[in-house]
Image (cartoon, rainbow, N blue to C red; front, side, top):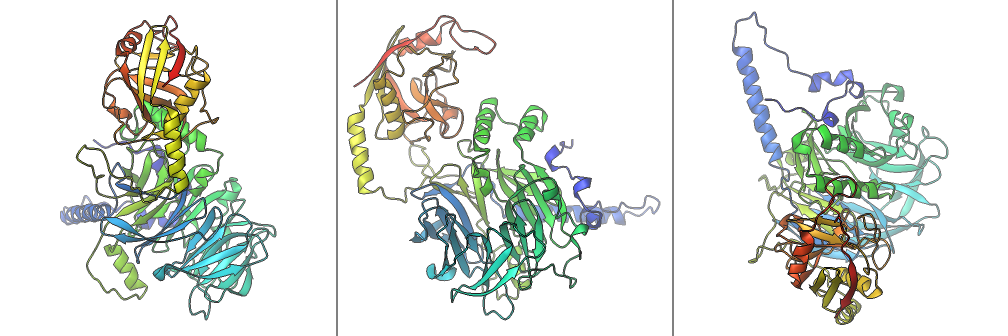
Amino acid sequence: KKKKMPDDLKRSREETSDDESSDFGPAPAANPESGSGEAKSSEKKKTRTDIKGKTRMLAELPDQNSYERSYMHKDIVNSVHIAKRLGFLMTSSIEGVLKFWKKAPNDIIPVKTYRPHMGTFESSLSSDETWFATKAETADRMIKIFEVNNFDMINMIQFEYVASAMEFINYPNASSMYLAVAEATRPVLHIYDPQASTEVTTVTVSSLRGNAKITHLKYNPAYDCVIATDDIGLIEYFEPSTGTLPKDGRLAFTMKVETDLFKLARDKVVPLSLEISPNGEMFSIMGANNLAYIYKFSTGKQYRVYDESLSHYIEQQRSGPKEFQLEALDFGKRVAVEKDLSGKGVLNKVNIVFDDSNHFAVYSCLLGMKIVNLKTNKVERIVGGFENTERFISIALYQGRTEATQQLQQQLGEKIVDQAKNTDPTIFSTSWRRERFYLHTRRSPETDSTNATRRDVLNEKPSAEDIALLSTTESSMGSKAILRTTMGDIHIQLYPKEVPKTTENFVGHCRSGYYNNLVFHRVIEGFMVQTGCPYGDGTGGESIWGGEFADEFHPKLRHDRPFTVSMANAGINNNGSQFFITTVETKWLDDKHSVFGRVTKGMDVVQAIEKVRTIKSGAAKDKPCEPIRIINAEVQ
């Protein structure tokens, strides 16, 4: 029985040009009057070949529901870049730190660390993987140039204008790629020699309006052409040396009216990202309307459009294919995170990358990371789907020396020294509010003798100030608490060493009297009892610092037994004041809720609360019919 295709992956006739039907249309059927089985045999052979080819290509892509490993920065990681042929990785954090890593078999190795800027910066990797440039998002008006092969910073470029975007391009008679830097107030590009830090010339993109702000630049070496987007959604092609549309036959159009390059501006959609496929035949844009766009480069026509809006996922959860539906609690948390992300500029970093075979598009979404087959127009798999405590954002795809990579190198005239395929498919990703980046592979996470995962590598050493602060905090925090309730006392062992932030928040609320007179607003027999909401209905509460604070997980603190004390939340890094005490083992809550305590005395009190009569329906469902209150909380 055929599975129904998700609505967001149905090919839209309105969004697909007629001239592409020969490439992706249905194969001609055999003539029923011929009486020959040759056509059917040929069709079966082609189908077997297609399946074999697809299987091979999918084997060169990650396939795990959990990430294998993660590495640290000292602050939130906001970008990842991969030099595919060299196997070098560049990661950056919002404090302005850049790290170089070398891809090793089944892992990565740290190489060098720089701090090129004092805050968040943008970066660009040249298509030939020679140069890497960084530009601060603030107005320090300086670009740092790195030589990728040696991991060295070799130059600095200073300028007097405010820059908006940059990209390495080929330029006539240049010995290597030059750097194009766009002004933020007009469509003018300044062209620099990255080795000499001198400005070679300026190029005006004449087809853009006079005050246009270029937001993205990408150079396509297959067409020797630059593509740019501006702040109202216009998409422009131009030659690097002239700033005008190529009209020498390399493109399938000579005027923009023959293309779909006006559509985003017409629909008032601002592009958030821009990527080009390895063979140069497609490019992708993630729109501010949460639609993912795939274009054919030669025609400028929209080829695929995928709906990644929250409303689409809510409808899909209600009536879509079962394989894309989640448990209600899990889905609710992801929706809460998605709502929190909207309007904060976080999704501006979501990009859509292509695999080496140019058959698949990969991007992050509410479910994890989608791998979409652009030929069949179907989702082949979701990577990282079990990680519901993470909202992955930016990604970079490494596949090693695949067959497609070697073919591309031959087309570019590059010498292939090692003919053997050496694949280790890995998606490198950032995640919202995380000081880590993640490796998604075809391997499961490692575990130790206690079956706890060892995947989050502690590669950053704490500073002396951090160690001193931690020891002071632990000693002053207390290690035990007593909740005095209207049904009896509950004694709790706390874990300030393992989860200092969570424990500090709980202790602070206890000592300030925040929990005094609050009710247990949610009680589910055979599951847990919950309290800590100042409104008594589960809708309120904040941390001792105001607002929310991040999750804390420790391998020794799991929901592996009854009477575990853990933080309630509405999504990732969404902790406030509410907490709950389990009455059974609840392992499905691991790495979703922060465990910070165990009940050591008063288990009978917890069980008595668990068994009280509760409201069975409506907005107050699971609330005790008679209020049970915390009289006060004491910390020892």
